[in-house]
Length: 79
Figure 1 (cartoon, rainbow, N blue to C red):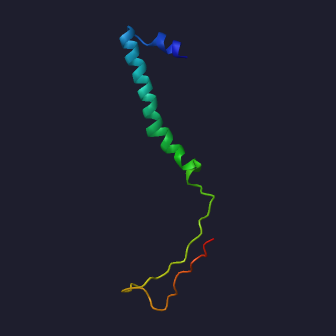
Figure 2 (cartoon, rainbow, N blue to C red):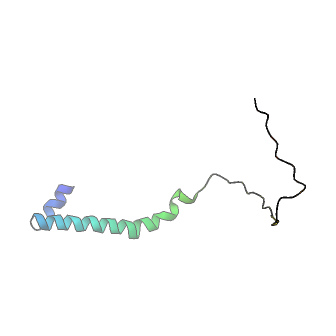
Figure 3 (tube, helix red, strand yellow):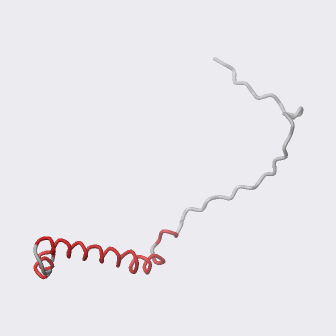
């Protein structure tokens, strides 16, 4: 296929390279501006199958220091 394109593009080596570069750029532009936006809604990127649990919200009131009713941290015995 590339050989057929190379033979049909007019000009010398520089013209053929420029012509092939323009064809590649046009194909990429066509993909990005036409094809990908059309097929994007049909792709499964937004179909999430993992449910994340919702955590209950806890209200925290600011305090000046540690509460006197809190117990001291437990200490594990050393061996």
